[in-house]
Image (tube, rainbow, N blue to C red):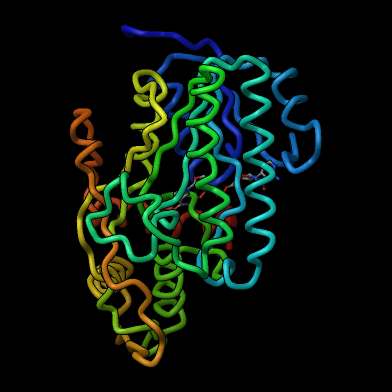
Length: 317
Ligand SMILES: NC(=O)c1ccc[n+]([C@@H]2O[C@H](COP(=O)([O-])OP(=O)(O)OC[C@H]3O[C@@H](n4cnc5c(N)ncnc54)[C@H](OP(=O)(O)O)[C@@H]3O)[C@@H](O)[C@H]2O)c1
């Protein structure tokens, strides 16, 4: 391995969906000792918890994934919690890492932080051109404050931090609880349950016409190691495929891969949301990087994992 600048990397939120992909990938990419923690170890909402975590673990790099995360149902129901928990966790953890003298800090924000009216493909420089989708704004605005934090701590203190923007991530270990699930785990669960119960149809909300850009979690995790080792800038980078997939195409693919033989009923009385949301991958490609897992391959892996985890009782339901 050419470059080994870190001995010990701390990952917050390590037991979450992305954390489970990122921890082994970081070890593979950096050769460093990687220590993962979750809320039971250190509740980062509590004053002093971030400082205690850093004193105990003494990392030279931190990959910060701890967050309150959820799909649209949860965002609608708990907007204050999404704002408060994310802004507090991030503000404290980031500052504590600077004070402790961590050499590098890397974190993720979501593509929902972009303005609701940003034209696709959405380039990183569109970030401040308007207000995000109001329903998830408490989460996404709290998260995007880390862009401001990254730039200002670099300018004032020379603190080296990186903020990446993964697209719509899916994969093994995702959250399949229907209140918290994003679209892919929600559809996988509903098709599999309908198949097992022999139901004639599955109802999907909207027309199915909106398009989205999905990225496999294993690809995001692999690139995280590269960014930790080689990228020293507060300019964010989209981590996605840049590929357009309609929700209808997605649902048809999941139906086929889960072996559900019934119909899909589109409830066109439900709102469609943003019609087209695709991320520009120009900056990612200019660094010589890309997310290469196809949607079909990634869905196969995710469905196989979910079927097994459901039997073992380890899926988040
Ligand atoms: N999922 C996506 O599509 C997506 C897309 C873009 C960006 N992101 C970002 O990627 C990161 C990881 O997301 P994810 O999907 O992996 O989330 P997740 O599965 O919900 O995992 C969240 C993690 O954060 C920890 N956590 C939550 N509250 C905490 C607290 N008060 N103190 C300490 N730890 C706490 C959880 O620990 P416990 O398990 O102990 O509660 C868990 O390990 C987040 O920053 C998210 O914003 C996710």
